[in-house]
Amino acid sequence: MTDKLELTDEQWRERLSPEQYHVLREAGTERAFTGKYDKNKQAGEYHCAACGRLVFESEDKYDSGSGWPSFVRPADGDAVEEHSDTSHGMVRTEVVCANCESHLGHLFPDGPQPTGLRYCINSAALQFEPEEA
Image (cartoon, rainbow, N blue to C red; front, side):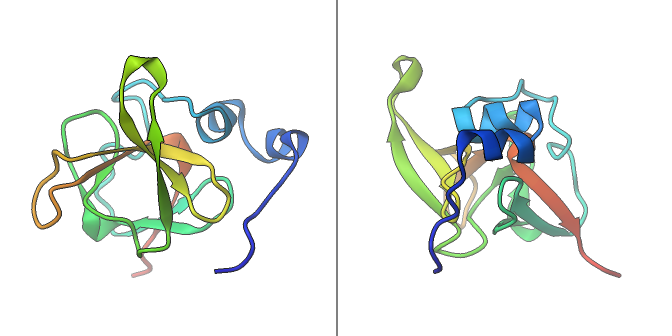
C-alpha cells in the first residue's frame, strides 16, 4: 500500500460536496433510505468518494432493509480499516477508507452468511462505477 492521502481541511472542502464532506470528513451519516446507492442493483464497483480507492464490489452488496447500502465484505483485505467508535453513547465499529481515512460507515455483526457481517455504508461516501457490458 502506498502512503495515505493527506489533504488540508480546505483541500477536502474544495474536493467534496457539503454532504460528502459532512459524511466523509466529519463522520456524519446520511438519513436512512435517502442515499442514491441504497437500492442500486447494477453490477460494478464502489469506490471511496474522497480518494477513488476501490472499497466494495456489487457482488458483495445485499438489501439489509436498513436504508443504507450494505455489504458482506470489503473489496479486499486492505480496502478499509476498522476503529472503535464510542460516539452517541454507543459502542460501534467505524469503517474508514484505508487510503484516505475518510469515514464510510459502520460494521455490524448481523449480516448474512458467509461472513455474518454488515458493512453499513453511506451512499455519500461512495462513487459507483458500473461494470462495462
